[in-house]
Image 1: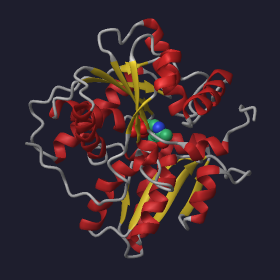
Image 2 (image 1 turned 30 degrees about the vertical axis):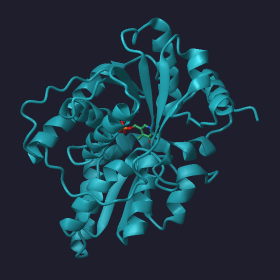
Image 3 (image 1 turned 180 degrees about the vertical axis):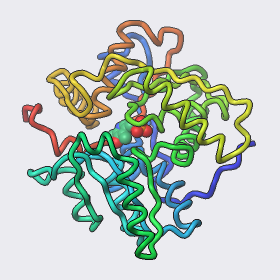
Image 4 (image 1 turned 90 degrees about the vertical axis):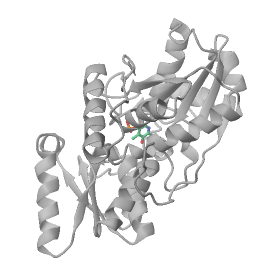
Length: 329
Ligand SMILES: *Cc1c(COP(=O)(O)O)cnc(C)c1O
């Protein structure tokens, strides 16, 4: 049996599993389409990051950390979620952001500022080159002041954060039982790999009748297969009980488009269409591309052997408010 580390209760869990009746008529090709509503994990804590932060924050508190130090893009959902977890727990938060302040002051970045988090901006190339040393320098800075800062990696994806989606796989296992689903495909957006890693490991642990797939929104399949392996090895170095788990990372590559955070008209049109068809909002950075990838792969017949397809809605709504130029309202 797997022993879970301690977690705090921060997300509104379990999240619902809905059937998408009209979307499956439009794109399903005979499959039944479902959506796991991890966009409903909370208002300010909306999305997938809070599941990881439940374990990360418990670790921080149990080990005497008083500051959460993390990093990401200016419109990072992970940084916004970390900022509000910190505010809710009375922990200081310091965000290291790639690129200059968003002048329009929108979306996640706007919320970061409301949260009271300390924010430092670095040029994109310096950030890319020196992220680890920047984080370590800040950690030393806090140590010199008598504070203890926990470095949380990009997206909260490491051997600690991925427990959030191991636990989510258990939750999905209950969902599938309730709906009598015996064979399925589960699809999520992959940005730093932790969601896919946790779901893939969790699926093995609870014998989930599902194959897990990630649609990468940056880099490529090779990169994420390596990243997911690295997170799994980190998990094994911290916890026992995984020796018999065989991890397979299935990446659906080809849907990055112009690059991370850049969405074309196909994605914006899909966001509009799903909003009116099902009353569900996707975001241009992650879930819009993943949903697009899912329906493209359905059209190709990739999932032909199972009737049920489950899209994990990983959140991101504030990113839409930061970048909605592509939407005709
Ligand atoms: C971070 C994020 C993802 C990607 O999850 P990872 O665990 O980083 O791969 C997907 N969707 C949204 C909305 C996110 O914020």
